[in-house]
Length: 413
Image (cartoon, rainbow, N blue to C red; front, side, top):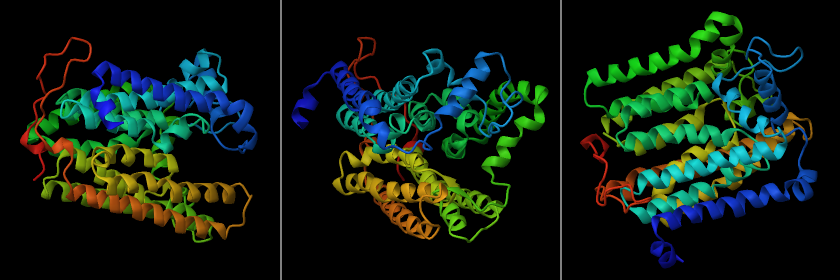
């Protein structure tokens, strides 16, 4: 199989990615209604919210200000709501959203291949296959009808653009990612640390501020009070302890409630320490992004199982050449999904609260596997450590042997 994949042309590899998309994602979508949907909990998924937000915008409403009475307040950044418009225009049925989210899963895999192939075409292609077959991504895009595939794409694309030395595009994309679903912003300091001078760092901070102003100013002028609810939501200002399958959220479900500010403060301090560690150890961008993401998911008080698709994507560059990391990268899915299922059942009254402690045990097991995979990756070489050797033309537009310029800060110390 490996020999056959190596023999494929670059366009043939893109066709293979499309075939995987059609078989894996298309197959689940086709079998959803006749087979799977009857076994899925009707409370699972946010499809009604996606449809409502899209209808609101299509009818000329203002997000945050014109939310229907009795509906959930908009607690997310604004841009994600506008990304629900295309599937709603296509009919707004469950399958249009599944197709839309699957498209972003494909974009993530294709981007990994197109960018990383400059270092080595074959392992980049294998990494793209792993990303596309990531179980977190596969089931959330289809049966789960979750918007996390969009989040994953907007999370990984700034790192890929930075690897291509498209620095301004990376800054713009990470800022757009923040205004879409918040999480991308944790990568911005790692990108700034890769820049050689403070002058360049301030220039990119200024660019991020400019993009932020262009996006936020209309909402600040029209509905400032409602608009500013989403930062407090992500900082867990309410004293509910946590949310989702995070450790603090499960402690809260089990009866031990800590103020949300404590979890947010611990996460921020841990991230600051991680940025300092990456700087002191002169870690390259890819390893820095992996470590920051792992620390964030281990401590942030409001996470879902689907967020683990992000470190999964970063780990693939090692997993394609190291079976130890591959086993851990794929294996963490089992305990994390058991934890997610138990947490969901407890929060919806299907299981007693004591099962929150069982969920916490499985979460700790999953996090331990992830941390061990990250530990091995930080100590092991990957194909990105080798000098870029260019890539064969994809559509006849590239110059054979061309490669992106790589600064010394991108190399492993």
